[in-house]
Structures are given as C-alpha cells and as structure tokens.
Length: 196
Image 1 (cartoon, one colour):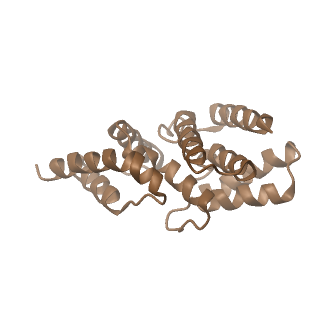
Image 2: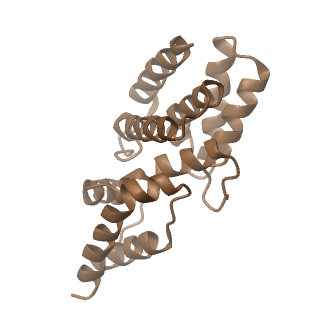
C-alpha cells in the first residue's frame, strides 16, 4: 500500500508544478512535503494504525492542492482533486470518504474530532512552532499580497501574526511538546516587534 503514497506524492508534485500559479509562494510542494513529514512524525508517535495513517498521509498530500484552483473554496477544491486521484487509482469508497473528511477537517474554525483529524491539523500548524517560522510567515505574506492583492504594513503583519500565534492551540499533547516551546519563542519575538 506504500504505492498509493508514492503515487500521491508524484501526482501532487506534478499537479503543483503544472497548476499552481506563481503567486502561490507559501502553499507550494515544499509546504506540502513539510506537512506530510509532520503528519508522519505524529502518526508514528501515536502508533496510528496503518489504515488510518494511510488516509492521513494521502489527505496531507492533497490538503492544499485546491489553492491552485480557488482561494475561497480551496478545501472543496482540494477534496475534488483528491477524489479525482483516488478514483483513478481505484481506491474504495470508504477510503475516499475518509480522505475527504480529513481534508474537510482542516478548514479554519473546524474542531478536529478524531485523532487523525487532530494530527492533520497539528501537522499543518507545524511551521508555527518551527525555527523557520519567520521565513514561512514572509512567504505567506507575499502570497497574500500577490494572490489576494492585500497589502499589510510591517506593523500590521507582525500584529496579525502575534494574534494568530496567541490564538493557536495544538490539538495533540505530542505536537505541543515537540513544537510548543519554539512557538512560544516565535510569539515572544513577535510581541517584542509589536512593542517597538
């Protein structure tokens, strides 16, 4: 069953290469790869059964592909792209439903219910507790400016990011233990910037 994951990686890499607008400099293959890596780390820590882990990893590969199609409806677009791929590789209906449900759970404001949903949400938020947070933040800012044509002053952007980190909570203890300390350091640096 590892074949489906290798095929998913290959499909997503090519899809992003061909379909992702150049204005998308944050939601790239590199971002997707980091989410998959974080999901793998968390799934291993929780000894997630393979059937659940496989669906989790496929969802991680496809979670942001919809940005190639639509900003506002990227979750549903990501689900459509994943279903197209899963239909073509002959995945069973229950697997397609599970992958779709996992992708749907990544929407902002949706509270994850299952362990797999919590892992995927945490994997997507991995960068918040990464030493590379500020690079990711600048890429996200640039993507917003280019694709949504919204410009923020430096102070506005720092304030938005500080609030975002203050409001963010990891959904698993393991993620909080692994990435929480660095997230707190990143937040402190942001707060110091807001105060200046």
